[in-house]
Amino acid sequence: MPARAGYRCAGIIGTGLIGGSLGLALQRGGGVDKVLGYDSDAEMLERAIACKAIQQAAASLADLSRSCDLIFIAVPVRTIEKVMADVAPHLASGTTISDVGSVKERVVEAAAKILPKDTNFIGGHPLAGSEQRGVESADADLFREAYYVLTPGAGCSDDAYSRLHALLTSMGARVIAMEPRQHDRAVSVISHIPHIMAMSLMNLALERAEEYPLLRLTAGGFRDMTRIAASNPGIWLDILLENRDAIAESLDESMEMLRHMGKMLEGADENELEAWMEAASRGRQSLAPALRESLEELFNMTLAIENRPGVISDVTLAVGELGINIVDIELMHPLESAQALLRLSISGEEDANRAAEALRTRGYRVALGRALGGQ
Image (cartoon, rainbow, N blue to C red; front, side, top):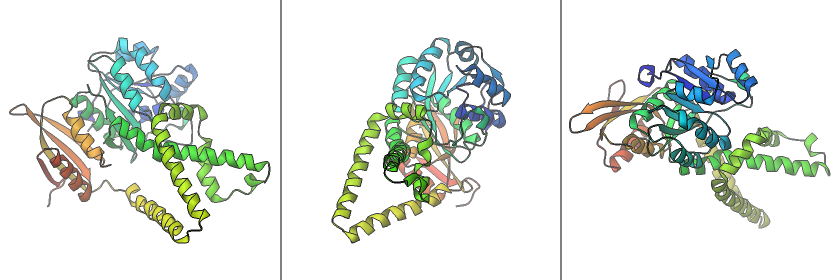
């Protein structure tokens, strides 16, 4: 795996928890020869060196940009565009640039305007994190078994995409591809709205605490729901503002659902209320097996593709739209008639069949079989 992913030098811009964890994972995986780091906070950069999250500190963004063939931008989402503008004049042709922000549409649009056309931007969002902060809490295993969403830019080459995919997979991440808009709508529901709900509930409790000693009587449900309200306000201010359009849509839907529940309570509609709660309970229970999904039973699918820009993005987006993780991806050059073979590895027979059918619907000829042989 590292041999296919191999990069001469990876640069980490922003050496906090996520950036530091990336640095550790890259060094352990062997997919890069060297890991450089840069942080506008000199003290943070020194701590990253001390923690061995990076191997060497770059003197400036320009120095890092000139030295690296792979760059991760691991700064708050509203700072990503400025960092792109700072590094753009110094990037070598063919450099791959990615980010780790939890909002993708605005970032991908900015990259298309700012970064040189002969570079490759691939938006990234690791669905991994920790309640801890700072590079001292960095962990090389942070991305293991975690979903890692990629949103490649329109000008990204297939080779650049497959190399980054291989590198992230070698770190243990479950990599899926999504359209930026689709990603932002999804995370507004599974991440951003929950944080808003937690903060709203916490603020409601604080207001009521003047009247009743609620905070001294908090039950487990309240503690569980409001735990994430303690998240870094500065980081979440950036996230909420950057994804405000998708969040507004999801908030409208959430409020409509709450209003519907209010009507059920007002009408004392016991049957409908019970059915509503049972549906939620079944949904949460069915989620548990998916979260424990095993990577052990692999299926390989091979398809012939044209050697044209964007074909790998088209294939991986078709699979990513189903929420299916591609465990491994390999592009085999070339075949006759300007074609190549693309091989995808997927865990689980059901997901493999669903992915194959989706690709066949798009006109691809797919051969599917177990990775270790058999029917």
